[in-house]
Amino acid sequence: MLAEQVLERIDTGILLLDSSLRIVKCNQALKNLADKACEELCGKPVGEVFPRFAEVRYQHILRECLERGQVRFCSGMIHSAFVLPEDPLRQFRCRQNLQVKRLEDCGQYYVLLQITDISDHFERVFHLKHLIRDLGADYEQARTSGESMRKQAYYDHLTGVYNRAMFMIQLRHDMKQADRNQKLVSVLFLDLDAFKAVNDTYGHAIGDLLLQQVAGRLKACVRSSDTVARFGGDEFAIILTNITEAENVREVAEKIRLSLLAPYDLHGNSLTISASIGFSMYPADSQDPQALIDLADRAMYRVKFSCKNNVACYCDL
Image 1: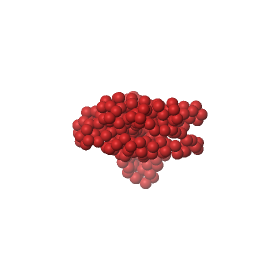
Image 2: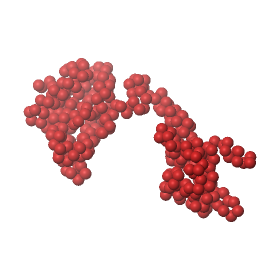
Image 3: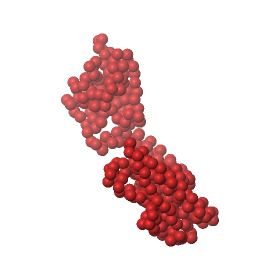
Image 4: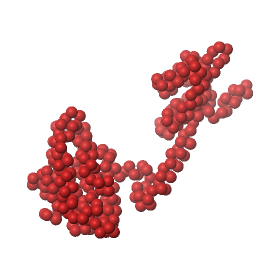
């Protein structure tokens, strides 16, 4: 029949369900979407074959269609996909729109599901959105950051602050800016005292939570123009910009030291921990970014192996 030929030729996947929400009929486009043969589909509950339709909200949609004739449209931008293919790689990029309608035949009601594959459209919109954002970005940022996935490489996955790579990029930028503005830059390096004991006593999950809260306190102690980074383990580094004298840095470092001393509530565990902090100054101590970090690290270790819970400037060593 011509109607059958048309049904098999259209690009939209068709599922026809009876009043028990069992699959009565499907077309070739639907089989292509699902990577399933007709005998795997017909006669079975739709929620058994396609688990998405077993969820409460979709069961409600289907019942509302049967009982009230309510027409629904579900966007793939929000719902992702309704019929997943067997191939996991295709599942990852799969986006589908869903149209739900009621049909009547000889007093019997059916649910007509029309599923349209919009995966290609979704990917084009996704890439266009990121392309527009990247084109609007500063050239230097785009050159150093690259694509959006590469940008993630510059953040510490646990704490959300910058990592060592982005810290170095930012430090070079701030040093150039300081030269233009005739200001100073300072690098602070800090290490938590006895952090290993926290992991040994309470476990790494509590240790990770502590590091996250430490990062939050560090960001709260500095300006938005300053930079906080985690170098690994319990080591953090900070760039302070637009500095006029070393005493300004010492005041900020002392503020950080006191902030970190306040008790932490870690899933019901109340802990306190201190930090050893060292700092160096640009351009007085060095004009090399890595050297500035190394000198601040050296000052920190002087505190670490003397009294802990204190602040030291490299120029005082």
